[in-house]
Image (cartoon, rainbow, N blue to C red; front, top):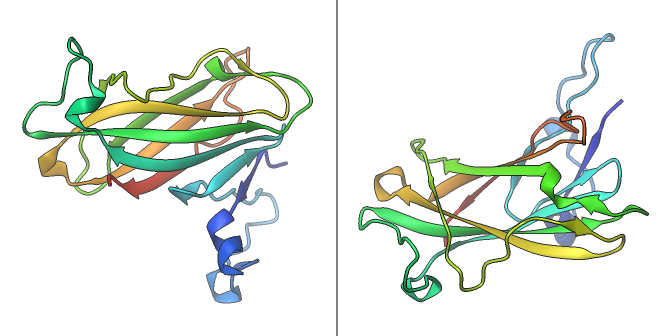
Length: 176
């Protein structure tokens, strides 16, 4: 049984309602479950079985004005960026936002990011999200300029017993 359902808002907006037969994955063996597609683009949503939906909405370059006087800014050889995402609670009970972990890495030539915090426009993840509500959240990073402008953003969700609730969805996009 699958724990997640990917959704495709951009495909639906273009009028694409299903994958083409040529693009269909090979059928799994009789004793295997098909894997859900967890390789997504910025703008694609990912829905969990409990109704929680996560959509990475943008990856934007941080500006000097985003940082407060005492906040650590990216080095001259780094690109500072912010990942923004929406979580919509489509269930009938509150969901724990602290149950998610997230990370960004370089996707051009690899590259490890450093966490940053730019106060202006920041919405850190934490607390609970009530049913039928949407929260917009952010996380800030610095990536070496030599590693390009493409990133992969990964989210992990666990329950109170520290069990991972789905295969980690990965979103790939460019810092703009």
